[in-house]
Image 1 (tube, rainbow, N blue to C red):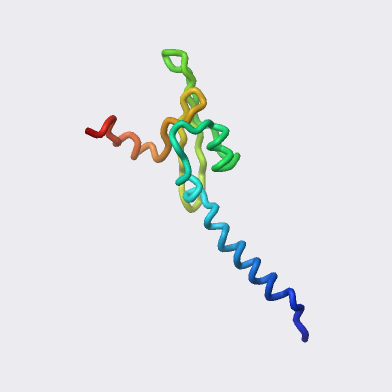
Image 2: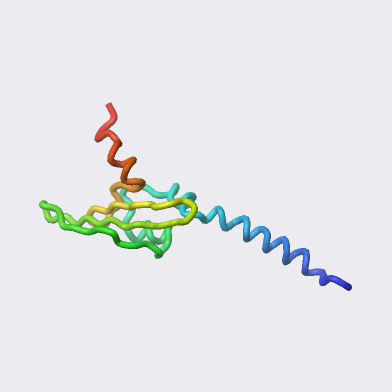
Length: 103
């Protein structure tokens, strides 16, 4: 049986692409987040497969929104927006225990 000369190249390409999929994980993409990013910038970076899990208008008429990404390997990622800008992200248990300011 004679193998096609392109078979080794095809196998190498398939292995390379399979390895690259881990580089595109939610964990690695979330490392590129920055405070102040717009909701459009964050969803462009992280993907459109999020759920809006909360929204409200604050007492001073500002809009607040929380979106959630679920990833089987990474877990849950919550992103908090005020007036369309990213103001915090992460696990709520960690965020609740963060000091307001570091002296």
